[in-house]
Image (cartoon, rainbow, N blue to C red; front, side, top):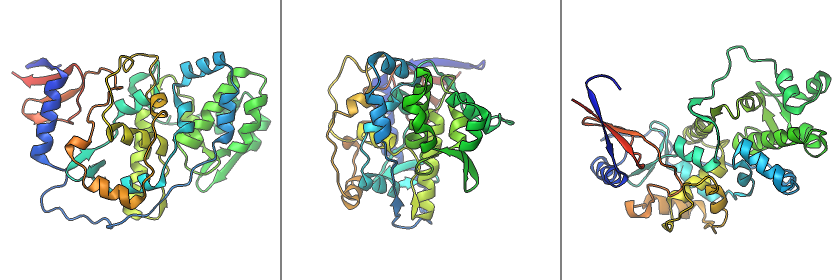
Length: 343
């Protein structure tokens, strides 16, 4: 911290009160007299990959291998069982603001955060302050694929295909290795790349882009939550501006995030901040409403402050910078919040 400033720590209750007062004062994020150039209604396509083979591969693993997978890749397998409802995703897109990268429901501004996505996926051992950036001169894709699959150069070279302007590999090329690979650890890697390519970054049906394979090599070193959010935000903005395009963000994570903040208030739990507790696993126990797009639009259009859980119980305790002197920063609430005040 620079000289001439002091650090003051506020408790969670005070920051929550501050957040609510700021929301009431400033309303939504749109400026006065702002006229949107976006169309009044946006049509969104949402086609999901068939995940049955991935589910079966996970179910057939022994308990030891499942625990090993989760220690390396977190709780991403729970995403295989998160049901995505088209009506909700289409309605959420309708309220997305590309200019501010947030949802504006009535006069409430909401957006997924890096901390929330990191906690949902239960990523372990990652460096939270480091994000993924593509290398200036990455290794050839064939070498990355050889390392991922544990196969020779001849095999890897035959599997690479091109769709549009991007290279990649079809899931069909990897699924035969998923159950028959002689190295059990490589089978876990292939299962993980299948989830990342078909669920978290589903750019094209049955196809895993080279970008996902390059990103996969950084797992365990950096926090991939910002990359997941960036892809989701970009896809939402693209759908909102153009309409009639496919949503290619992670619809499962977006679904879990929204329902974590909307609906019945959760009961306090002693497991919320432990390593054994899984927000995604707990979410799968819920029964979700499958409303039409029109009904969700009515609900979101009339959303009130009391309808929203601004702070989810499963978010770990984190220090955040929320204010500097009289300047308000992003109104995120958490235990042990840092307040910076100039002397």
